[in-house]
Length: 269
Image (cartoon, rainbow, N blue to C red):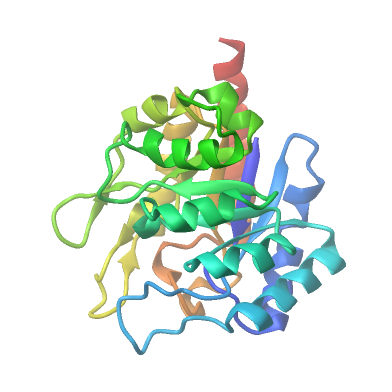
């Protein structure tokens, strides 16, 4: 089971490493393929006043320090095509944000690197249509590709992440059928914390309800997933981004054991 976890955005180095240290039990678990996640720039914040992060250069330096100190594999997201190459020199997975999942140049630039590519499903996208985003990456890595399927996406290191769909204004809902639909043509990660986000719910900031994240994660594991994504902070109330829907390390450690147990039952079945 792949587990991707870390803070929404890079804050102070001390806080970043404190969170990284708290997640060591996941990295040491032989049943888990662990990746530490943090963003160097949150370019799609609701308000201009919201904290975005330290930027590309300082952010990559911070992530590189985490990799050096803890030996973690890394994930971060990009918003501009020029960022793909320098980011791939530091991280193991490049993530395409949900709002940008149809941006051809961005997907192609990321696919030209050797990094694994994780494309988040847009809140406005049907699960069936995500095959075309996967195909953009697949054809970049294999020009002879005509169609996309799970095996080819896995071979060329392309995966998708489900994070819910817009349900009216300021709310998201997860259609569990989308996990099975997308998993027919690519490995699928379930994003438990963004799925409980309430976009723009805090007057210029996104709200959320983290209490529902474990519930949705367990349901997703029962449907069948290849990995779990969760944003984590040692003090979510003081997090500079996405605090209301983030988990504490202790919550994620407990949840990871539950997910592994459920997946084990599903795989045996």
